[in-house]
Amino acid sequence: MKKYRIAVIKGDGIGPEIVEEAIKVLDAVSVAEGFEISYKEFLLGGAAIDVTGEPLPEETIEGAMNADAVLFGAIGGEKWDNLPRDKRPETGLLKLRKALGVFANLRPVTVYDELINASTLKPEVIQGVDLMVVRELIGGIYFGEPRGREGDKAFNTMVYSVDEVKRIAKVAFEIAMKRKKRVTSVDKANVLEVSQLWRESVEEVAKEYPEVTLEHMYVDNAAMQLVRDPKQFDVILTGNIFGDILSDEASMLSGSIGLLPSASIGEKHGLYEPIHGSAPDIAGQGIANPIATIASASMMLRYQLGEDAAADRIDRAIKQVLAEGYRTKDLSSYDAKEIVSTSEMGSLIAHYASK
Image (cartoon, rainbow, N blue to C red):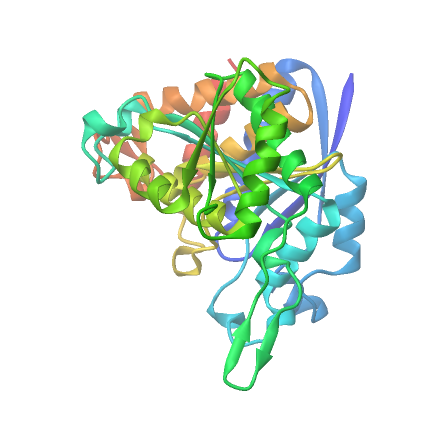
């Protein structure tokens, strides 16, 4: 029997609640598919600061490096907002991503038919949307040097090498080969030299994938096109800061940020988390939507552990639960037959996933 070791980082706010539901579902599908999962918890973010004084303890780095995958909830909150930058929860997450070498952030966006009215866009615009944003995660302006402040000026540097661009491009093209074989590379090559290098490097990789259609699009146009005609996209490939913005924009096509998962993958390691924040204002109330975290666990099974059948079980169960009208509070206005708690939603998905 296959055995997998998962590093669990629950984090802050609603993080512990939603991760518990993902574990519940993972346990159900592991039994159904005949493999074992063991879990070990580690601290990150505000929870780590409160205990150790640091947002990312060395123990967490070591635990994540030694695990087969990392399942993560969310971090941050007003309690830690006034700390120095190097002591804030978000800095701990950035350092963990860097330590793991998870350079590719995958954010799928799927519009569920049952929630077609949850989006602010017209149903005919979003029905059938199924796209993947592939964002470079550990380079670009968030990590470039030099950076800092001098007198009344501040500066950051956007830096990419050819190798960094090519490795993220390969991820996007490989994913496109399993989808509709279309890649839209998003840059600002009409203004930025770094984007010109990005475009040239992507075109080099494209030669290795003659079956995939490559399109280039400026980031401002891409932002407009995502709300004008999102069905034109299959795989969106872009850098760190552009991907940060576009993936959040794309998430709202589904109508709720509580529905969408993400995977951050590298050569060896993987970090799987919902795209939403820690929402401390609703923590402990049992109303948080765990679907994004459960779907992130599905991505972990598919992209890290190679357990496609188990991932399929989870994806089908999420669709079935929504089709039957079960909703958490954030989705209560959209064809809800029954409003359920965080724990109840997890139990429902686990039940259907085990069948």
